[in-house]
Image (cartoon, rainbow over all chains, first blue to last red; front, side):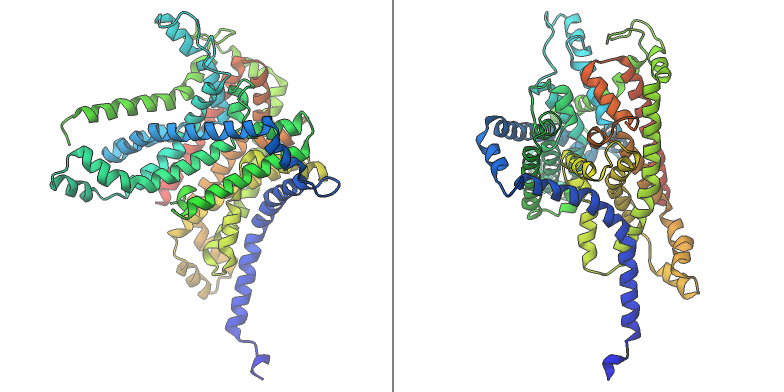
Amino acid sequence: MTTSVPDPSQKHQRREHGLMLALVSPALLVILLLIVLPVGWLAWQSVYHDGFTLENYRRILAEDVYWRSFALTFEISLSVTVLTLLLGYPVAYLANAVPRAWSIVILALVVLPFWTSVLVRAYAWLALLQRTGVINQLLRYLEVISEPLALVHNTFGTVVATVHILLPFMVLPLYATMQKIPNDLMQAGASLGANPALTFLRVFLPLSLPGVLAGSTMVFVLCLGFYITPELLGGGRTVMVSMLVSRNVELYNQFGAASAVAVVLLVSVLLIFFVVSRFISLDRVLGQK
Amino acid sequence: MTRLSPARIALYVICALVLVYLILPVVIIVPISFSSARFLTFPPPSLSLRWYQQYFANPAWMQATRVTLMLALLTVLIATPLGVAAAYAISQSKLRIMRLIHMALLLPLVVPIIITAVGIFFVYAWIGLVATMPGLVLANVMLGLPYVVISVLAGLQSFDPAQEMVARSLGMNRLRSFFAVTLPQIKSSVVAGGIFAFISAMDETIVALFISGGQYQPLTKRMFTALRDEIDPTIAAISTLMTAASFMLVLLASTRQKKSG
Protein backbone atom coordinates (compact mmCIF):
# COMPACT_ATOMS: atom_id res chain seq x y z
CA MET A 1 0.00 0.00 0.00
CA THR A 2 2.75 2.39 0.90
CA THR A 3 4.63 1.67 -2.30
CA SER A 4 1.83 2.94 -4.52
CA VAL A 5 2.17 6.47 -3.15
CA PRO A 6 5.31 8.03 -4.64
CA ASP A 7 7.44 9.84 -2.16
CA PRO A 8 7.51 13.48 -3.35
CA SER A 9 11.09 14.05 -2.26
CA GLN A 10 12.19 10.92 -4.08
CA LYS A 11 10.37 12.04 -7.20
CA HIS A 12 12.01 15.42 -6.93
CA GLN A 13 15.39 13.79 -6.57
CA ARG A 14 14.84 11.62 -9.59
CA ARG A 15 13.92 14.66 -11.65
CA GLU A 16 17.01 16.43 -10.40
CA HIS A 17 19.20 13.48 -11.41
CA GLY A 18 17.53 13.39 -14.82
CA LEU A 19 18.15 17.08 -15.38
CA MET A 20 21.82 16.82 -14.42
CA LEU A 21 22.36 13.86 -16.72
CA ALA A 22 20.64 15.75 -19.52
CA LEU A 23 22.96 18.72 -18.98
CA VAL A 24 26.11 16.63 -19.08
CA SER A 25 25.05 14.38 -21.96
CA PRO A 26 25.85 16.61 -24.99
CA ALA A 27 29.46 17.05 -23.85
CA LEU A 28 29.69 13.38 -22.97
CA LEU A 29 28.31 12.44 -26.38
CA VAL A 30 31.02 14.49 -28.11
CA ILE A 31 33.67 12.72 -26.03
CA LEU A 32 32.18 9.27 -26.68
CA LEU A 33 31.89 9.81 -30.42
CA LEU A 34 35.19 11.58 -30.98
CA ILE A 35 37.60 9.93 -28.61
CA VAL A 36 36.14 6.76 -27.08
CA LEU A 37 34.77 5.41 -30.37
CA PRO A 38 37.93 6.25 -32.38
CA VAL A 39 40.20 4.64 -29.80
CA GLY A 40 37.90 1.61 -29.67
CA TRP A 41 38.06 1.48 -33.46
CA LEU A 42 41.85 1.38 -33.33
CA ALA A 43 41.82 -1.38 -30.73
CA TRP A 44 39.42 -3.46 -32.84
CA GLN A 45 41.35 -2.83 -36.05
CA SER A 46 44.58 -3.91 -34.39
CA VAL A 47 43.29 -7.44 -33.76
CA TYR A 48 40.70 -7.92 -36.49
CA HIS A 49 41.38 -8.29 -40.18
CA ASP A 50 39.17 -10.93 -41.80
CA GLY A 51 39.10 -12.69 -38.47
CA PHE A 52 41.01 -12.33 -35.25
CA THR A 53 44.75 -12.06 -35.52
CA LEU A 54 47.63 -11.06 -33.32
CA GLU A 55 49.89 -10.65 -36.34
CA ASN A 56 50.17 -6.87 -35.85
CA TYR A 57 51.40 -7.29 -32.29
CA ARG A 58 53.73 -10.09 -33.25
CA ARG A 59 55.32 -7.74 -35.75
CA ILE A 60 55.93 -5.06 -33.15
CA LEU A 61 57.91 -7.59 -31.13
CA ALA A 62 59.61 -9.28 -34.07
CA GLU A 63 60.45 -6.50 -36.48
CA ASP A 64 63.41 -4.34 -35.76
CA VAL A 65 61.92 -1.08 -37.03
CA TYR A 66 59.10 -1.23 -34.53
CA TRP A 67 60.77 -2.05 -31.35
CA ARG A 68 63.77 0.11 -32.10
CA SER A 69 61.36 3.01 -32.50
CA PHE A 70 59.74 2.19 -29.15
CA ALA A 71 63.17 1.98 -27.52
CA LEU A 72 64.19 5.31 -29.04
CA THR A 73 60.95 6.96 -27.93
CA PHE A 74 61.40 5.79 -24.33
CA GLU A 75 65.04 6.84 -24.42
CA ILE A 76 64.21 10.33 -25.70
CA SER A 77 61.33 10.69 -23.23
CA LEU A 78 63.60 9.71 -20.38
CA SER A 79 66.35 12.16 -21.34
CA VAL A 80 63.80 14.92 -21.90
CA THR A 81 62.28 14.24 -18.47
CA VAL A 82 65.68 14.34 -16.75
CA LEU A 83 66.68 17.50 -18.61
CA THR A 84 63.44 19.35 -17.86
CA LEU A 85 63.84 18.36 -14.20
CA LEU A 86 67.43 19.62 -14.07
CA LEU A 87 66.50 22.90 -15.79
CA GLY A 88 63.08 23.31 -14.21
CA TYR A 89 63.90 22.64 -10.57
CA PRO A 90 66.19 25.69 -10.06
CA VAL A 91 63.67 27.94 -11.83
CA ALA A 92 60.77 26.72 -9.69
CA TYR A 93 62.98 27.01 -6.60
CA LEU A 94 63.91 30.60 -7.40
CA ALA A 95 60.30 31.54 -8.26
CA ASN A 96 59.32 30.19 -4.86
CA ALA A 97 62.12 31.93 -2.96
CA VAL A 98 61.92 35.47 -4.34
CA PRO A 99 59.35 38.18 -3.44
CA ARG A 100 55.93 37.79 -5.06
CA ALA A 101 56.40 40.45 -7.76
CA TRP A 102 59.52 38.65 -9.01
CA SER A 103 57.95 35.22 -8.91
CA ILE A 104 55.14 36.54 -11.13
CA VAL A 105 57.74 37.75 -13.64
CA ILE A 106 59.55 34.40 -13.62
CA LEU A 107 56.36 32.39 -13.99
CA ALA A 108 55.14 34.67 -16.78
CA LEU A 109 58.36 34.02 -18.68
CA VAL A 110 57.89 30.28 -18.13
CA VAL A 111 54.28 30.29 -19.31
CA LEU A 112 54.83 32.67 -22.25
CA PRO A 113 56.19 30.00 -24.65
CA PHE A 114 53.41 27.68 -23.44
CA TRP A 115 50.92 29.81 -25.36
CA THR A 116 52.93 29.88 -28.55
CA SER A 117 52.00 27.31 -31.17
CA VAL A 118 54.23 24.21 -31.16
CA LEU A 119 54.57 24.72 -34.90
CA VAL A 120 55.84 28.27 -34.47
CA ARG A 121 58.42 27.06 -31.98
CA ALA A 122 59.55 24.25 -34.27
CA TYR A 123 60.10 26.91 -36.92
CA ALA A 124 62.01 29.10 -34.49
CA TRP A 125 64.30 26.22 -33.53
CA LEU A 126 64.96 25.49 -37.19
CA ALA A 127 65.91 29.14 -37.64
CA LEU A 128 68.20 29.00 -34.61
CA LEU A 129 69.84 25.62 -35.10
CA GLN A 130 70.20 24.96 -38.81
CA ARG A 131 73.60 25.05 -40.57
CA THR A 132 73.16 28.68 -41.60
CA GLY A 133 71.14 29.43 -38.46
CA VAL A 134 71.65 32.00 -35.77
CA ILE A 135 73.66 29.81 -33.37
CA ASN A 136 76.07 28.52 -36.02
CA GLN A 137 76.60 32.02 -37.41
CA LEU A 138 77.30 33.38 -33.96
CA LEU A 139 79.75 30.60 -33.10
CA ARG A 140 81.55 31.11 -36.42
CA TYR A 141 81.67 34.86 -35.89
CA LEU A 142 83.21 34.28 -32.49
CA GLU A 143 85.59 31.85 -34.16
CA VAL A 144 84.69 29.04 -31.79
CA ILE A 145 84.11 26.73 -34.73
CA SER A 146 85.21 26.78 -38.35
CA GLU A 147 82.61 24.37 -39.75
CA PRO A 148 78.90 24.66 -38.92
CA LEU A 149 77.72 22.13 -36.34
CA ALA A 150 74.89 19.70 -37.16
CA LEU A 151 72.50 20.93 -34.48
CA VAL A 152 69.22 20.02 -36.11
CA HIS A 153 67.67 17.30 -38.31
CA ASN A 154 68.86 14.82 -35.71
CA THR A 155 68.06 13.62 -32.21
CA PHE A 156 69.89 16.54 -30.64
CA GLY A 157 67.63 19.13 -32.31
CA THR A 158 64.56 17.11 -31.40
CA VAL A 159 65.56 16.96 -27.74
CA VAL A 160 66.42 20.68 -27.54
CA ALA A 161 63.03 21.69 -28.97
CA THR A 162 61.09 19.08 -26.99
CA VAL A 163 62.64 20.13 -23.69
CA HIS A 164 61.70 23.70 -24.56
CA ILE A 165 58.08 22.76 -25.17
CA LEU A 166 57.73 20.58 -22.07
CA LEU A 167 59.62 22.70 -19.54
CA PRO A 168 56.51 24.61 -18.37
CA PHE A 169 54.81 21.27 -17.60
CA MET A 170 57.67 20.57 -15.19
CA VAL A 171 58.07 24.02 -13.61
CA LEU A 172 54.39 24.61 -12.80
CA PRO A 173 53.71 21.49 -10.67
CA LEU A 174 57.14 21.90 -9.00
CA TYR A 175 56.32 25.50 -8.09
CA ALA A 176 52.85 24.54 -6.84
CA THR A 177 54.36 21.89 -4.54
CA MET A 178 57.19 24.11 -3.29
CA GLN A 179 54.71 26.83 -2.39
CA LYS A 180 53.05 24.48 0.08
CA ILE A 181 56.31 23.76 1.93
CA PRO A 182 56.14 25.85 5.11
CA ASN A 183 59.00 28.28 5.51
CA ASP A 184 59.19 27.55 9.26
CA LEU A 185 60.48 24.08 8.51
CA MET A 186 63.53 25.50 6.79
CA GLN A 187 64.07 27.94 9.64
CA ALA A 188 63.68 25.12 12.13
CA GLY A 189 66.34 23.19 10.29
CA ALA A 190 68.63 26.19 10.34
CA SER A 191 68.03 26.89 14.02
CA LEU A 192 68.96 23.31 14.84
CA GLY A 193 72.34 24.01 13.36
CA ALA A 194 72.03 22.62 9.83
CA ASN A 195 73.70 24.63 7.10
CA PRO A 196 71.56 25.75 4.14
CA ALA A 197 72.76 22.90 1.93
CA LEU A 198 71.85 20.30 4.54
CA THR A 199 68.44 21.87 5.24
CA PHE A 200 67.77 21.81 1.52
CA LEU A 201 68.78 18.16 1.15
CA ARG A 202 67.06 16.88 4.29
CA VAL A 203 63.95 19.06 4.44
CA PHE A 204 63.14 20.91 1.23
CA LEU A 205 64.08 18.31 -1.38
CA PRO A 206 62.08 15.40 0.14
CA LEU A 207 59.02 17.62 0.57
CA SER A 208 59.20 18.71 -3.06
CA LEU A 209 59.25 15.13 -4.36
CA PRO A 210 55.48 14.92 -5.06
CA GLY A 211 55.94 17.87 -7.43
CA VAL A 212 58.91 16.15 -9.04
CA LEU A 213 56.79 13.04 -9.60
CA ALA A 214 53.82 15.02 -10.95
CA GLY A 215 55.96 17.06 -13.34
CA SER A 216 58.05 14.10 -14.49
CA THR A 217 54.96 12.00 -15.19
CA MET A 218 53.34 14.70 -17.30
CA VAL A 219 56.54 15.45 -19.24
CA PHE A 220 57.34 11.78 -19.84
CA VAL A 221 53.83 10.90 -20.97
CA LEU A 222 53.47 13.94 -23.23
CA CYS A 223 56.86 13.23 -24.75
CA LEU A 224 55.92 9.61 -25.56
CA GLY A 225 53.27 10.92 -27.96
CA PHE A 226 55.23 13.82 -29.48
CA TYR A 227 54.81 14.15 -33.20
CA ILE A 228 55.34 17.61 -34.72
CA THR A 229 58.74 18.29 -33.18
CA PRO A 230 60.47 15.00 -34.12
CA GLU A 231 58.85 15.11 -37.55
CA LEU A 232 60.13 18.62 -38.33
CA LEU A 233 63.41 18.64 -36.39
CA GLY A 234 64.40 14.98 -36.43
CA GLY A 235 65.39 14.96 -40.09
CA GLY A 236 63.67 11.65 -40.80
CA ARG A 237 66.14 9.66 -38.73
CA THR A 238 64.55 10.15 -35.34
CA VAL A 239 61.51 7.94 -35.88
CA MET A 240 59.44 8.20 -32.73
CA VAL A 241 56.40 5.99 -32.14
CA SER A 242 53.95 8.68 -33.22
CA MET A 243 55.73 8.91 -36.59
CA LEU A 244 55.50 5.14 -36.92
CA VAL A 245 51.74 5.47 -36.53
CA SER A 246 51.41 8.26 -39.06
CA ARG A 247 53.70 6.64 -41.64
CA ASN A 248 51.84 3.37 -41.44
CA VAL A 249 48.64 5.25 -42.18
CA GLU A 250 49.79 7.81 -44.72
CA LEU A 251 52.58 6.09 -46.61
CA TYR A 252 52.01 2.37 -46.33
CA ASN A 253 48.25 2.06 -45.72
CA GLN A 254 49.06 -0.43 -42.98
CA PHE A 255 46.03 0.38 -40.86
CA GLY A 256 46.28 -2.70 -38.68
CA ALA A 257 49.94 -2.09 -37.89
CA ALA A 258 49.30 1.60 -37.18
CA SER A 259 46.45 0.67 -34.84
CA ALA A 260 48.53 -1.87 -32.94
CA VAL A 261 51.33 0.66 -32.42
CA ALA A 262 48.78 3.22 -31.24
CA VAL A 263 47.27 0.73 -28.80
CA VAL A 264 50.65 -0.18 -27.33
CA LEU A 265 51.45 3.54 -26.93
CA LEU A 266 48.11 4.25 -25.25
CA VAL A 267 48.43 1.26 -22.92
CA SER A 268 51.92 2.45 -21.89
CA VAL A 269 50.54 5.93 -21.13
CA LEU A 270 47.58 4.59 -19.13
CA LEU A 271 49.85 2.18 -17.26
CA ILE A 272 52.15 5.04 -16.25
CA PHE A 273 49.19 7.12 -15.07
CA PHE A 274 47.87 4.12 -13.13
CA VAL A 275 51.18 3.41 -11.39
CA VAL A 276 51.69 7.09 -10.55
CA SER A 277 48.14 7.41 -9.21
CA ARG A 278 49.08 4.94 -6.46
CA PHE A 279 51.51 7.55 -5.11
CA ILE A 280 49.94 10.94 -5.84
CA SER A 281 46.53 12.23 -6.90
CA LEU A 282 46.11 12.35 -10.66
CA ASP A 283 44.50 15.79 -10.35
CA ARG A 284 47.94 16.95 -9.38
CA VAL A 285 49.54 15.45 -12.48
CA LEU A 286 46.91 16.98 -14.74
CA GLY A 287 47.62 20.33 -13.15
CA GLN A 288 44.24 20.87 -11.59
CA LYS A 289 45.51 21.48 -8.10
CA MET B 1 69.84 34.66 3.37
CA THR B 2 70.39 38.20 2.08
CA ARG B 3 74.14 37.71 1.72
CA LEU B 4 74.97 36.45 -1.76
CA SER B 5 76.55 33.06 -1.30
CA PRO B 6 78.23 31.34 -4.28
CA ALA B 7 75.34 28.86 -4.38
CA ARG B 8 72.91 31.75 -4.63
CA ILE B 9 74.83 33.33 -7.49
CA ALA B 10 74.97 29.99 -9.31
CA LEU B 11 71.21 29.69 -8.89
CA TYR B 12 70.65 33.13 -10.41
CA VAL B 13 72.93 32.40 -13.37
CA ILE B 14 71.32 29.02 -14.10
CA CYS B 15 67.82 30.49 -13.92
CA ALA B 16 68.76 33.39 -16.18
CA LEU B 17 70.13 30.97 -18.77
CA VAL B 18 67.05 28.75 -18.61
CA LEU B 19 64.76 31.75 -19.01
CA VAL B 20 66.74 32.95 -22.03
CA TYR B 21 66.43 29.45 -23.50
CA LEU B 22 62.66 29.61 -22.94
CA ILE B 23 62.15 33.05 -24.42
CA LEU B 24 64.68 33.16 -27.25
CA PRO B 25 62.75 31.01 -29.78
CA VAL B 26 59.57 32.99 -29.15
CA VAL B 27 61.33 36.30 -29.70
CA ILE B 28 63.64 35.35 -32.60
CA ILE B 29 60.83 34.98 -35.14
CA VAL B 30 59.98 38.70 -34.95
CA PRO B 31 63.24 40.09 -36.47
CA ILE B 32 63.27 37.25 -39.03
CA SER B 33 59.77 38.18 -40.15
CA PHE B 34 60.80 41.81 -40.75
CA SER B 35 64.00 40.87 -42.60
CA SER B 36 64.47 41.68 -46.26
CA ALA B 37 66.66 38.63 -46.83
CA ARG B 38 65.42 35.61 -48.72
CA PHE B 39 67.27 33.24 -46.42
CA LEU B 40 67.61 33.24 -42.71
CA THR B 41 70.31 35.67 -41.83
CA PHE B 42 70.77 37.20 -38.47
CA PRO B 43 70.87 40.09 -37.83
CA PRO B 44 68.66 40.99 -40.82
CA PRO B 45 70.46 43.06 -43.51
CA SER B 46 67.59 45.54 -43.66
CA LEU B 47 64.01 45.76 -42.55
CA SER B 48 61.09 45.13 -44.86
CA LEU B 49 57.49 44.07 -44.87
CA ARG B 50 57.85 41.79 -47.87
CA TRP B 51 57.00 38.57 -46.00
CA TYR B 52 53.86 40.11 -44.59
CA GLN B 53 52.94 41.27 -48.11
CA GLN B 54 53.53 37.75 -49.42
CA TYR B 55 51.27 36.35 -46.77
CA PHE B 56 48.42 38.78 -47.35
CA ALA B 57 48.71 38.58 -51.14
CA ASN B 58 48.64 34.79 -51.31
CA PRO B 59 45.09 33.41 -51.83
CA ALA B 60 46.02 29.98 -50.41
CA TRP B 61 47.31 31.49 -47.14
CA MET B 62 44.26 33.75 -46.95
CA GLN B 63 41.84 30.88 -47.49
CA ALA B 64 43.66 28.89 -44.76
CA THR B 65 43.42 31.90 -42.43
CA ARG B 66 39.68 32.17 -43.04
CA VAL B 67 39.27 28.46 -42.28
CA THR B 68 41.26 28.80 -39.04
CA LEU B 69 39.30 31.83 -37.81
CA MET B 70 35.97 30.24 -38.72
CA LEU B 71 37.02 26.97 -37.11
CA ALA B 72 38.17 28.61 -33.86
CA LEU B 73 35.01 30.72 -33.65
CA LEU B 74 32.63 27.80 -34.26
CA THR B 75 34.59 25.66 -31.81
CA VAL B 76 34.14 28.25 -29.07
CA LEU B 77 30.45 28.75 -29.85
CA ILE B 78 29.79 25.03 -29.49
CA ALA B 79 32.33 23.94 -26.86
CA THR B 80 31.52 26.74 -24.39
CA PRO B 81 27.80 25.99 -23.81
CA LEU B 82 28.46 22.24 -23.78
CA GLY B 83 31.31 22.65 -21.33
CA VAL B 84 29.40 25.04 -19.06
CA ALA B 85 26.38 22.72 -18.91
CA ALA B 86 28.60 19.74 -18.14
CA ALA B 87 30.64 21.58 -15.49
CA TYR B 88 27.46 22.83 -13.82
CA ALA B 89 26.00 19.31 -13.67
CA ILE B 90 29.28 17.84 -12.38
CA SER B 91 29.55 20.39 -9.60
CA GLN B 92 25.88 20.31 -8.52
CA SER B 93 24.92 16.67 -8.88
CA LYS B 94 25.50 14.13 -6.17
CA LEU B 95 25.29 11.23 -8.60
CA ARG B 96 28.17 8.77 -8.26
CA ILE B 97 28.57 8.46 -12.01
CA MET B 98 29.46 12.16 -12.31
CA ARG B 99 32.99 11.45 -11.11
CA LEU B 100 33.43 9.00 -13.94
CA ILE B 101 31.91 11.46 -16.43
CA HIS B 102 34.24 14.18 -15.16
CA MET B 103 37.21 11.93 -15.87
CA ALA B 104 35.83 11.06 -19.32
CA LEU B 105 35.61 14.75 -20.19
CA LEU B 106 39.32 15.12 -19.42
CA LEU B 107 40.27 12.22 -21.72
CA PRO B 108 41.39 14.52 -24.56
CA LEU B 109 44.21 15.71 -22.28
CA VAL B 110 45.29 12.17 -21.42
CA VAL B 111 45.17 10.28 -24.72
CA PRO B 112 48.19 11.14 -26.91
CA ILE B 113 46.90 13.40 -29.64
CA ILE B 114 48.40 11.31 -32.44
CA ILE B 115 46.22 8.39 -31.35
CA THR B 116 43.11 10.56 -31.22
CA ALA B 117 43.94 11.94 -34.66
CA VAL B 118 44.39 8.57 -36.36
CA GLY B 119 41.29 7.15 -34.65
CA ILE B 120 39.14 10.10 -35.74
CA PHE B 121 40.54 9.73 -39.24
CA PHE B 122 39.29 6.13 -39.44
CA VAL B 123 35.86 7.02 -38.04
CA TYR B 124 35.54 10.01 -40.38
CA ALA B 125 36.64 7.97 -43.39
CA TRP B 126 33.82 5.58 -42.59
CA ILE B 127 31.06 8.23 -42.26
CA GLY B 128 32.45 10.59 -44.90
CA LEU B 129 33.52 13.54 -42.72
CA VAL B 130 37.13 13.73 -43.92
CA ALA B 131 38.05 17.10 -45.48
CA THR B 132 34.83 18.75 -44.33
CA MET B 133 34.29 21.78 -42.11
CA PRO B 134 31.79 20.06 -39.75
CA GLY B 135 34.28 17.24 -39.20
CA LEU B 136 37.03 19.67 -38.36
CA VAL B 137 34.82 21.71 -36.00
CA LEU B 138 33.53 18.62 -34.19
CA ALA B 139 37.04 17.31 -33.53
CA ASN B 140 38.13 20.68 -32.17
CA VAL B 141 35.05 20.94 -29.95
CA MET B 142 36.13 17.64 -28.39
CA LEU B 143 39.70 18.91 -27.91
CA GLY B 144 38.50 22.25 -26.46
CA LEU B 145 35.95 20.83 -24.03
CA PRO B 146 38.41 20.00 -21.20
CA TYR B 147 39.63 23.61 -21.09
CA VAL B 148 36.08 24.94 -20.69
CA VAL B 149 35.16 22.27 -18.12
CA ILE B 150 38.30 22.83 -16.01
CA SER B 151 37.96 26.61 -16.08
CA VAL B 152 34.22 26.66 -15.27
CA LEU B 153 34.57 24.04 -12.53
CA ALA B 154 37.22 26.22 -10.91
CA GLY B 155 34.84 29.17 -11.12
CA LEU B 156 31.95 27.19 -9.64
CA GLN B 157 34.09 26.11 -6.71
CA SER B 158 33.97 29.60 -5.24
CA PHE B 159 30.26 29.95 -6.00
CA ASP B 160 27.72 29.22 -3.28
CA PRO B 161 24.85 27.12 -4.73
CA ALA B 162 22.60 28.35 -1.91
CA GLN B 163 22.28 31.63 -3.80
CA GLU B 164 20.62 29.86 -6.66
CA MET B 165 18.32 28.08 -4.18
CA VAL B 166 17.25 31.45 -2.84
CA ALA B 167 16.42 32.72 -6.32
CA ARG B 168 14.39 29.59 -6.96
CA SER B 169 12.54 29.82 -3.67
CA LEU B 170 11.58 33.35 -4.72
CA GLY B 171 9.81 31.86 -7.73
CA MET B 172 12.40 31.91 -10.50
CA ASN B 173 12.61 28.72 -12.51
CA ARG B 174 15.82 26.77 -12.75
CA LEU B 175 16.90 28.19 -16.11
CA ARG B 176 16.21 31.81 -15.18
CA SER B 177 17.92 31.52 -11.84
CA PHE B 178 20.97 30.07 -13.56
CA PHE B 179 21.18 32.93 -16.04
CA ALA B 180 20.30 35.64 -13.49
CA VAL B 181 22.29 34.46 -10.47
CA THR B 182 24.88 31.82 -11.29
CA LEU B 183 26.15 32.79 -14.73
CA PRO B 184 27.05 36.42 -13.91
CA GLN B 185 29.23 35.18 -11.06
CA ILE B 186 31.13 32.61 -13.12
CA LYS B 187 31.19 34.74 -16.27
CA SER B 188 34.96 35.29 -16.08
CA SER B 189 35.73 31.58 -15.89
CA VAL B 190 33.38 30.93 -18.79
CA VAL B 191 35.07 33.59 -20.93
CA ALA B 192 38.54 32.32 -19.95
CA GLY B 193 37.56 28.73 -20.80
CA GLY B 194 36.18 29.89 -24.15
CA ILE B 195 39.38 31.77 -24.95
CA PHE B 196 41.48 28.70 -24.16
CA ALA B 197 39.24 26.63 -26.45
CA PHE B 198 39.75 29.26 -29.17
CA ILE B 199 43.54 29.14 -28.82
CA SER B 200 43.46 25.35 -28.75
CA ALA B 201 41.53 25.29 -32.06
CA MET B 202 43.78 27.95 -33.58
CA ASP B 203 46.99 26.04 -32.71
CA GLU B 204 45.74 22.49 -33.30
CA THR B 205 47.84 20.79 -35.98
CA ILE B 206 47.98 17.02 -35.69
CA VAL B 207 44.28 16.19 -36.02
CA ALA B 208 44.05 18.69 -38.90
CA LEU B 209 46.92 16.92 -40.65
CA PHE B 210 44.90 13.73 -40.79
CA ILE B 211 41.32 14.88 -41.31
CA SER B 212 41.47 18.18 -43.18
CA GLY B 213 41.92 18.62 -46.88
CA GLY B 214 40.86 20.45 -50.00
CA GLN B 215 39.69 23.99 -49.36
CA TYR B 216 39.12 23.32 -45.66
CA GLN B 217 42.74 23.22 -44.56
CA PRO B 218 43.53 25.38 -41.55
CA LEU B 219 46.60 27.58 -41.35
CA THR B 220 48.53 25.12 -39.19
CA LYS B 221 48.25 22.32 -41.76
CA ARG B 222 49.58 24.58 -44.53
CA MET B 223 52.36 25.80 -42.25
CA PHE B 224 53.37 22.24 -41.41
CA THR B 225 53.54 21.28 -45.07
CA ALA B 226 55.49 24.42 -45.89
CA LEU B 227 57.96 23.74 -43.05
CA ARG B 228 58.55 20.21 -44.26
CA ASP B 229 59.30 21.34 -47.81
CA GLU B 230 61.19 24.62 -47.66
CA ILE B 231 61.71 27.24 -45.02
CA ASP B 232 60.41 30.55 -46.18
CA PRO B 233 60.29 33.68 -43.98
CA THR B 234 56.58 33.99 -44.83
CA ILE B 235 56.19 31.41 -42.07
CA ALA B 236 57.95 33.81 -39.70
CA ALA B 237 55.46 36.55 -40.58
CA ILE B 238 52.51 34.20 -39.99
CA SER B 239 54.11 32.92 -36.77
CA THR B 240 54.58 36.44 -35.48
CA LEU B 241 50.93 37.27 -36.17
CA MET B 242 49.71 34.02 -34.59
CA THR B 243 51.86 34.51 -31.50
CA ALA B 244 50.65 38.10 -31.12
CA ALA B 245 47.04 36.89 -31.39
CA SER B 246 47.63 34.14 -28.79
CA PHE B 247 49.26 36.51 -26.32
CA MET B 248 46.50 39.07 -26.62
CA LEU B 249 43.90 36.37 -26.01
CA VAL B 250 45.79 34.96 -23.01
CA LEU B 251 46.15 38.45 -21.58
CA LEU B 252 42.42 38.96 -22.03
CA ALA B 253 41.69 35.62 -20.35
CA SER B 254 43.98 36.27 -17.39
CA THR B 255 42.58 39.75 -16.70
CA ARG B 256 39.15 38.12 -16.86
CA GLN B 257 40.15 35.49 -14.35
CA LYS B 258 41.65 38.03 -12.02
CA LYS B 259 38.41 40.01 -11.95
CA SER B 260 36.52 36.95 -10.76
CA GLY B 261 39.02 36.76 -7.90
